[in-house]
Length: 237
Image (tube, rainbow, N blue to C red):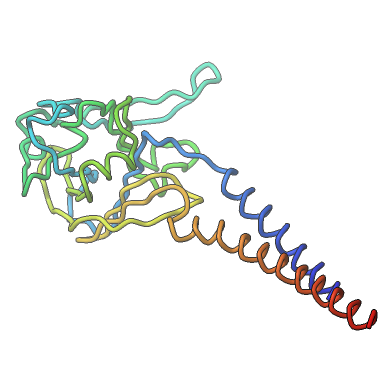
């Protein structure tokens, strides 16, 4: 009985400590989307997030800023510098005017978008952009997850350097990743919305399993005490 109780107690301690260290080891900016794609239409330069927003929405604007593409990354006076160019996209471009079943360009119409950077791995010094072709940055407003809750599932558009829409994905499916940041990743017609952290089910299990183990320990202790009491009663007779 003692061995069982000791094993259960050790298991409880390990289960409580190990996940906690992993949960809080990483943190990602909740106002930044990573944008990636594969199996895209020929000519695709970047993928744009589409949200279902009305033109009378308080967060809607006619045009934010054009996407900008990294030309080169270099060292100057010991500091890393970046040189960009704006794409030939304005309020008259196809992606800016795009509206399909209420879905419009988030990067060009959500008022809190500060920039959409198109990163080119061959122009970087340390290859950090290999798996992150673009970054969509927000300056205030709602966090990434809050946007998803307010406007619903995202879609995405494959766009060329002049703002022509080359293809549209279906609505996004949600994926949780406790080792990666927030992102939108297109693969052909499919789209994944990645959320940093654990899924609600995983969070529930992280809490429920230790509680269940703790309850088991209490049960075993009470049971052991009960047996001791019963034995003492029989011996007293």
